[in-house]
Image 1 (cartoon, rainbow, N blue to C red):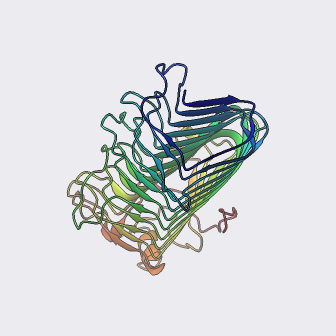
Image 2 (image 1 turned 180 degrees about the vertical axis):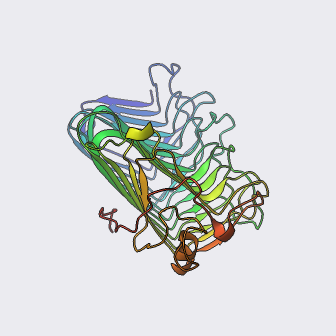
Image 3 (image 1 turned 60 degrees about the horizontal axis):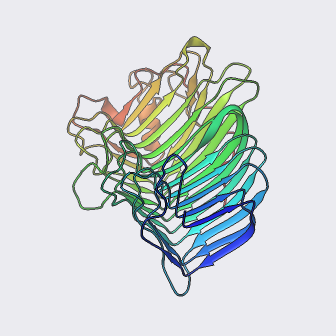
Amino acid sequence: FGIVGTNVANFTLRDSTLSGTHGTNLVLNESSVSFTNLSGTALFEGNNIAGGRADNMRIVNSSGSLTLTIQDSASDQAVFGNNNLNGNDSVFLQTSGSASLGLTIDGVAFNGARGDLLQINAFGNSSQDLVITDNQFHNTHTNIVPAGGGVVLTGGGAGTNIDVDYLIQDNSFQGADGHALSAAYKPVAGTIQGRIEGNVIGVDDGAGGTQGSVTSAGIFINLEKTAGAGSATYAVALVDNEIRDTGLAGIYLGVAKGTATDGATLEVTASGNVVEEMSEFNFAALYAVVGGAGSGDYSKLGLDLSDNVLDNSGATSGSSAVVLDQVSTTSHFYFPGYSGSPSGELNGGTASANLHTFLTGEGNVMTNGGYPSYPGGVDASFVSGLTGDPLILTPWMP
């Protein structure tokens, strides 16, 4: 280890450099900076940290309360350089038990990691308030693991009841092999509220390309309920993001495994986003899927889409601008204000009462890919029971 601590209360590291190689053992998670149960107030300001055998920074808390800030300083730009050639993450943060985390990451350059540039896990009954703003997530590592290399917010598992609020704003993402930004949770119960705003994913060069694999999304939002008593809800706002060069979907939304008594509900408000310059095989500019556990899956996915540019035309072998996939007959989509056919199809009602026309009327501009696609930009061929119910959850609000 470079710096290692256990049960430390309060810590500051400012304008310092940890370079070279820190640690020899990946199994022991030997890292450049490592704390177990760091509590109180911690500040990492203007540091240049690299070379971790496992992670560049690793903080794992199972109890206590931590207010953690990672930022640049007046003297130095905060940088996380490449970790070991066969290492793990650049920054790894985890809460479990009753631990709480208040996190601010601002103005930091994340330059390389074999695993993820940033991974934040929420387990047990822990709570997190995350503010991630004005950072550069550009992965230049030469040995990124398949489907890795991006930013990952996650948590859940057996016995979990988590409370997570997050703001991800004005960041730049490039170079991941997997999803550029993944915020996917699997709790038994809990509440997740998020806002993803003003971020730039991919390269604005007028041409489509693939930043990562053909299974990668620009923004990946997913709620999968773990079996057990209690409901899981997830509300997120996607506002004014620019997304390019993805292999699967510009925006991926999914929810599954809610039951009639222990529900799983995902609600997404998306406005002002631009999805364009997709790779050749990109499936959809926006792909949304509800259900997945058979006829007993009562998951719900509410979508409020307005003033988005959803352009999949760069995907010469791709599908529609918007693809809605309902896997379980007992699950369903809902779009506030929609009054057309329950199937959402173009021939499911009059010209003014179908999902295609409805979304266009909400200011969305949709352009299909080159594969035979549905007229109007929306493939809802697997949808039934579509309603116009209002959204009831609240995303993170500034």
